[in-house]
Length: 158
Picture 1 (spheres, rainbow, N blue to C red):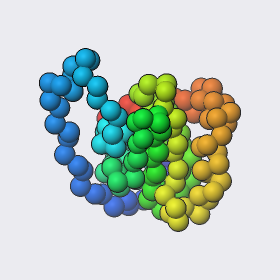
Picture 2 (picture 1 turned 135 degrees about the vertical axis):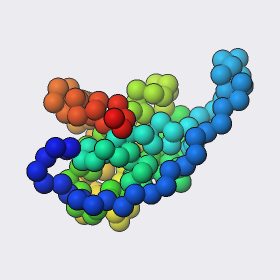
Picture 3 (picture 1 turned 45 degrees about the horizontal axis):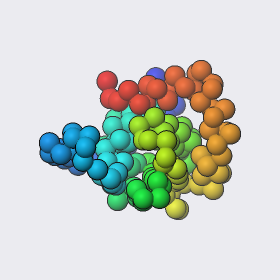
């Protein structure tokens, strides 16, 4: 977390960010059916702040539009994220932040899956199992300290 003596990645690589999405008047019209798409999911998670650095997940290339997938008709959303280093101790926290942001933002008809990009983390299987376990996620979100950290990440770059 920011302010700790030891960071996992002292000098992260910064990446350019995507342009903001153009919204038409139809996007704001509640009478027009507007399916959820990959760009909308990416826009929901791109500004989540990294727990260790005052940078967004997009700036660190942890999330990208190409790693978001949506099946609006089936109500399924899948987001893969790529930690900046293979032994990132914050991977589960980043995944929880992404999952919590989507659960807060999407209609309840959506099933949300958050996964580490295959081959990008040493504990990929364990973290994916943790993020897929509804009871473990619910328990984590009941922890006041952990919830405060997640809410700080969701508040965006200060």
